[in-house]
Image 1 (cartoon, rainbow, N blue to C red):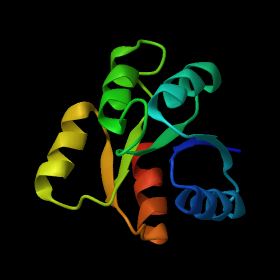
Image 2: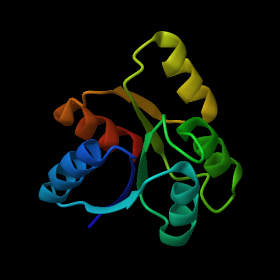
Image 3: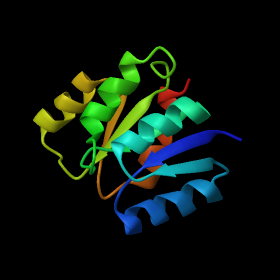
Image 4: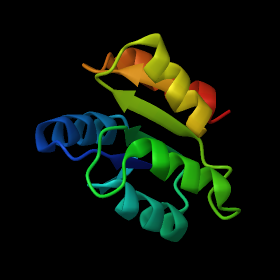
Length: 120
């Protein structure tokens, strides 16, 4: 079973994605902010991180930069999840180290295809 770390501070978004991913057979860990995401990624070594970019404590851009700078977590692909659909936001996420960028509301079939593509 593939382990995914879902980093999302919005309870409704987190719950919806958690349930949909679990129904697809994923083992899903959750974090509520960027600092918790870094700690959990180091501890659990998930196959993938789904990172909301607008987070409390430590935002998704900085959390991704720190994950990519850490030899223990740099190989874990990160997919940015954000309501900010502007090309500049996409570029900012990719510059931070994200492997892909998905806008909210989440197109779940597209997200699954992106998850598969970045973990190959």
